[in-house]
Image (cartoon, rainbow, N blue to C red; front, top):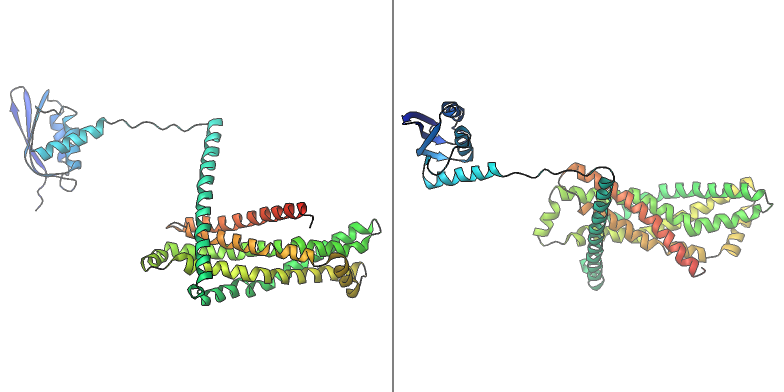
Length: 371
């Protein structure tokens, strides 16, 4: 049973002695610490007798130390060894001076931010390499033993990422093809070469716009969805539960999404190609009065299938990047909603940036190969 902290005073020559009794803890000390400090404030010498104290914690030791105003030493305190240790710990803590951290300002603050950003970029790069290494291991396992593949999840995700995205991809590509055709018609009419607008539409849509528009739309649609889904599972500790049960989250969560985009992006790119060419055809037919037969014949004769395959060759890389970035950002989510929002935003931004960068790299490669 807890006893309240109490003390009594007695004169001991030219010193004032305080006999402490009861329990000196955070719950029982009450006003005894402040009253003891007032009683000992004017005493030239102080002696403390703590042998009657039952229990004491750091709060009680701090109250005793503050009441004695730093006049505690081995000769003024009579206490059990454990009470002495508590008083020494509090005394050491009070004597410790914490260094004042000064934040750099101006130019040095800018250098510090740049340095931190470089270090974080290095850590992010290493984590990305680790993630894709783990994903490659899971893909290798699936190739060796297809029974490990969760086909139900793969087909469901392919439907969500593929079939459900056909309307938005087709509509956007249609208008992109129409805009390219309209710009080409207006520019080339000035030189009497409006017939070459057909080649401009074909090359632009087949080679660049179809795959880029498809990838950007899926980056905003699927990468954010993957990050949000996996991130919410991470917040609810469902991924930890998977690991406890011996289920690899990469096999259960990452690989089905990777497989779904790997299958659906080429199909969506083909839909985007058709929609873009139809948009360009409608503009050429209405503005330049070039009929559908003439349009398609010039596409077949002067554009050919090479540009189509150049655009389609980018699809698997785009699929891997979009799925990888979305899933990785989801796995990096913390335990709060703010972290989930940051990671979902980062998934979209990183995916779109990577798409533009990869497209530029492919353009340089094909330019060097003269394709």
